[in-house]
Picture: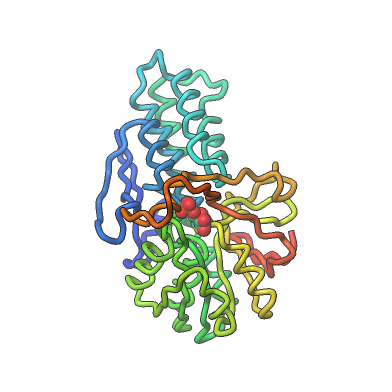
Length: 339
Ligand code: MRU
């Protein structure tokens, strides 16, 4: 698996990198205005960066949490190691509730500490190795998904997407945007309508930035213009934060609206997600916890107030698209019509 991702196109961002004793992340809250990298020196700092969306997107959240444990393992003394790691795992798990990749990665790394009689030094190396392995595997998955998905993109297709699902959201090519990158690399000349993705503008700030770097033509739209452009689109591509056993899918709020529009307009609606986003413990979407974020994100737009301070706000970060609205799942293992 060594060298995986070495040949990835140069237009892709690499927003997270681990080099003992810290994790360096591109602060996505500052994009596109500023390219600012921050160094995280403890699991607590990594959890805070995830909570504040400096690192975001389901696969990167999982990978960053894995590295958060590695950073912590090197920070703790030999005596603190086992109890300290359990505390760190709890803290990371509590940082954001919806993307299952987080729990999946934390559980995988913590397995390395179970019942072994390794020295503290060997344990630290083992934790670090697992975290790196998770990132490498996610890169491989992203390449596999991109190739699978590009087959479903007709030449000259116009694609509708929401939020950010590119290299800023997941290692390697990302998820839904990875399919678009691959179609572009194959000379299919895709064009993209990008929903701005209120309230934090991941579409406007991040997706357009990634598409412009790749020289893929894109048009930014207000979320509320999705119904006005759906007839001009050939397909809808979105990522996922968690997929239940029956195929119900949690993704950025607004995704369900796109699925309903696609159904009405008779357009295929694809969810692009690695196997780390499938949650065998969730039977249906009702078992998925939806993160609710602060009212201030809706009351303000940047520094300006756009609503009275005291208004009641509902600000869910994600919604659940029912399985029956999803044409197929594009995964690293293949294209799946029904789960
Ligand atoms: O709140 P965010 O920016 O972390 O939300 C991200 C998304 O909803 C993505 O679509 C999702 O993580 C899947 S794409 C990797």
